[in-house]
Amino acid sequence: DTGVSQDPRHKITKRGQNVTFRCDPISEHNRLYWYRQTLGQGPEFLTYFQNEAQLEKSRLLSDRFSAERPKGSFSTLEIQRTEQGDSAMYLCASRPGGGDTQYFGPGTRLTVL
Amino acid sequence: SQKIEQNSEALNIQEGKTDTLTCNYTNYSPAYLEWYRQDPGRGPVFLLLIRENEKEKRKERLKVTFDTTLKQSLFHITASQPADSATYLCALPNYGGSQGNLIFGKGTKLSVKP
Image 1 (cartoon, rainbow over the protein chains, first blue to last red):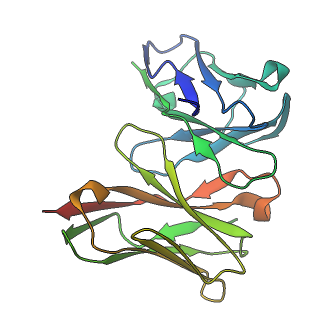
Image 2: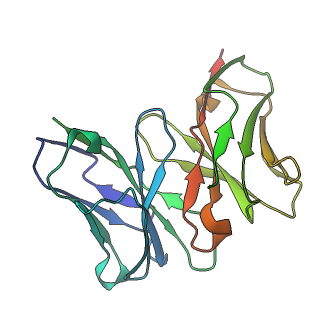
């Protein structure tokens, strides 16, 4: 399967702990996006990478959140000092440079106790 | 800022019927608009993209229209099947598509009863 993959699929953590999620995009896609989705809502944009450069960050991305994409391949999203309000599905999507369509991964479901 | 409204949170229809989902946006007209399907606990799956200069797009039993005057897109499913039961999301690019990050509606949960 050459789709977008995300790891882990589920994460349960205690408030105040740090968590890190990984996204592996489709190999030839140079654009990568992170979104967050809460129950009953559509996905909300968090941040965007073109190759290794982080070009855009939403105001939803507080200073407890950081994302990287070393070498323009996989990406990681870290949340420090998690809060219960961080509980959500974190989705990664990738897109080829010349195309418009984004392809989403299965998501990482985060539960903060 | 751009906002998207999808007509209903939930729709229940009988198998074999045709239904229409509505997506309205409030601000600038985007260069394109997309529809996604999302099953519980899974990521959205791309269905159709329609550009601002296209009136209609079809894919198998699906049809999407785009009216920039009304600021509206309609999503039609014909001969619906229970397997079509899912949440359908409308999305359009923010900033008119310069970076490609999408704004999504809340989705419409469609249930097709046998």
